[in-house]
Image (cartoon, rainbow, N blue to C red; front, side, top):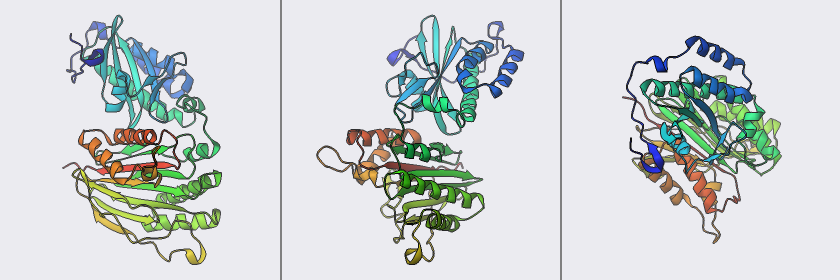
Length: 411
């Protein structure tokens, strides 16, 4: 067997080989472990992973979760060190959402991505004496199982949340992050993904996305200020938008609900924002821009100038004579493969040590080149947000939030 770069063995799609006696599965034991998993505490997941691996005829298993800034893969075994996302076989599996096999002492290591829907959670390390089609399928099955377990348990586990942090989080950020959805959601027709920095010190920026049947809803917000009040403003806006969506409101109803909520519960505070509604079957996109930088449409590896521009409208939450009489909802039809980009002004206004802005051209060019290189949307934004942080020496002057969604209907 010949090794590739970094001592990694390429992994073809394994054949559907039948299991021999040496790979027999103790199904009764496996059933017991799955039942146990439903009530297991999050801190018990590492030991449970090992027992499940053994029941599947594998060796040992170890769970790694990605940190908030997607730079490190952090083991749930607290005695071990994190692995870099950008310079490890484990990181390669995470970045590409593909399994990776490497040689190890007395056997092999299979790095399997942990993915819940479209959201990348981390990787699973499985050690095995040998690898065939049956063991490879069981490794993937184990990855699917623990991705679901982690997703179901991290909503109430402070331990899992703490394991993925590498710095102390400020109170406004803690409050705001409690409202944020997963970074990536989607289906076979469309995917929406977002990033937000500074990860531990954000206050006024936020994103939201949700799928209702065949409709993708997305939103980006930028509240006035950078303190607890800004976080409260954004949190009220997100709650009002979700309340209206879940009540069956259309795009205009959602914006109107946010306007009313801020005017009532956070008077004298407002935020800019863009709300979008994409029909994933027809490609019809409807959007409202409330005092925010206009969305960008990327088509065939170029930005379509002015495609999603619209007449200016006031920010969200203005009351009294400043409140708009009615919000204008704009509409267009996307083409298959189109990407729509929402962002806050902190993205293009990031400056290097000489005062030069990161700029809109550099911003869009980075996304276009990464897409052309075949990167997945979530990986495009991970690389982009790191490039912006590096450009400003990790000292952002303003919050930076980016949301990218793409329409890829299946014909």
